[in-house]
Image (cartoon, rainbow, N blue to C red; front, side, top):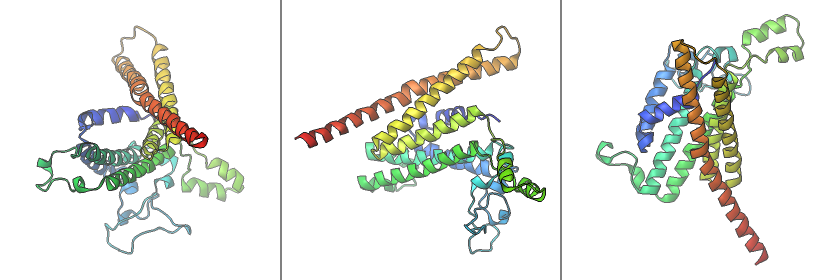
Length: 310
C-alpha cells in the first residue's frame, strides 16, 4: 500500500488556514478529521477509546499482559490504546490507521504554532470576534508560559510522528499466526523469524513518514535551542526529500512517452506535482532552516572559544 502523506498534508494546509497562518482553524479541522477517521466502520474497533472495544488488539497492556482500563465499567469509559500492538496485516487493510497519528501530530503542531503566534505578534491566530466574547486567555500568559506550552505541544507532536514512522515499518505478526507456529512444533527462534511479517506500506511511504518524523523532531530541537540535534534532523529531511524527488523524477522519465491512457496521464500529473513539492520543500523550507542551525552552531562555538581564550 502506498500513501502520499505530504500530498495529503499539502492539500489540508492549503484548504484550512495554514496558508494564511490561521492555525486555530487548522487545529479545529484536525479535530473534526480525527473524529471521522476514528469512527470509520472498518477501524473504529481499534481506534476508538471506548471500553466496549476492550478485547480489540489495540488495547494497551501493562507489564503483566493485562489491559490498563479505567475503574469505570461504563460502556463508553476511556480505554487506553497502543497502536504498536496492531499486526502488520491489519494495518495494511485501511489507510486510517496511518492518518490517525498523522493528524494527531498535525493538531499538536498547529496548537504549538498558534501559541507561538501569540508570543510573536501578541495576538491569536484567530480573530477575537469568534472567541466567544472574552477573547483568547492565552494572551495574558507570560512569555515563559507561552514557550513552555509550545514546547509541550511539540513534544506530543513528535510522539505521534514517531508512532507514524514506527507503524510504517511494523513487522508484527497476528497473534493467531504465532499460536499456530507454536502448536506446529517450531522453536522460539523459528517463531521469531516467522513473526517478522511484511511492512504494511511500501518504501516510498516509509521514506515520507521518516521525513515527516525527522522534520517534527527538528522543529522541537530548534524550539529548545538544541542546534546540533536540529541540524542532524533537518539534514535527514533534506536528504530524504531529495531522494523522494529523484525517485519520482526517475520513475516518471522511465515511462513510455506518447501513452494515450487517461489513467497514465493522471498518474503522470500527480508524479510531477509530487516532484515539484519535494524539490520546493527541500530548497525553500528545509535548506533555510538547516543554514540557520549551522549559523547558530558557529555563533555558539565562537562564544565558547572567546570565553576559553579571554
